Image 1 (cartoon, rainbow, N blue to C red):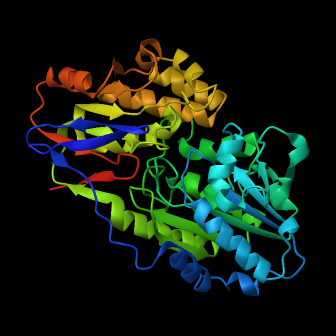
Image 2: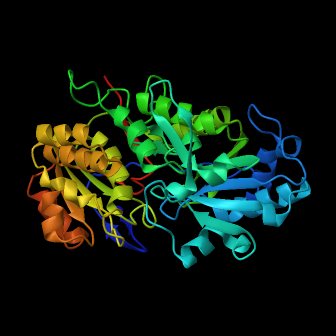
Length: 422
């Protein structure tokens, strides 16, 4: 019986379960050294000229990059981007790095240092503020009538470069690409309005079937985000694809949509793991920090993990959540314990955090979820889950259900089980 070390925050738990199948991937080694990968991608962009044919001397440039909850390899690619921009004749003082917080909290000084790496202290860095009208400007409306209001630093810059990492997303299909701009640097109103399309019309009720993990075609959330992001008209995209150990495996540069689609195809090839039959039990680690920095981030592993289970199966989730829920309004939504009334409340006053809370409770109602985290027993119970102090206690609780089949997913925030129909 093999022992698997499952990451939990900045530590790990040893896990053993007789006969368990481990759902993991072993990505190929990067074809080049990290810096060479980045340069090669910049030299051969998808659907776009290289930066050197886009940027002119003296122009202002805003580089958008993800916050600390989404590791992207930014400390490696941002210095190379700045070096290339300087080679185009852009002065350091005309470059701004904008942290795409969406509706998340501001970053600390130490978090800025981690994101910027050796650029920290050299290049201006700003956190996006989704609720500060002075920092926002409306640039138009989508065909559906949604006002697209974004950070002035992207609306008014001569050139905009959006960066991030591509990965699965539980209702936008994939992260990365257009999401760096919307919701990344959009107003709260724009964020909420674009995400509301996760729902079918009220007359039908429920969630749109195409607004799900790994689906872009016909996904109304993706389509709305892309339309809004195109209105910003970014000049260039850089997206990484990472290994489960957070190493840069491949880099995709170029046009907002073309380069992102190529990155998504790579993610699907690497991290969609086939499964012949649904299991009784799934033991899932988010993959450690920062994928379990808060529950909103950890929810991805919950969403992906239950895909390996039969209806009513049990999921043990390791999610440290040292930052708590990740947003002060998230837990408030669990005042709704009845799913139909929860959906009605969301339709009346939609919030992205509410959508994640609704999705959490829906899964906790459909499956037995045992959570190992720093969250309290009351909070865990309100989310419909059972609290365990550690992995040993969680596994003891899981054994009470007499599961016959088990899967272990060490990188639950990355790997998506796909049950193959007979």
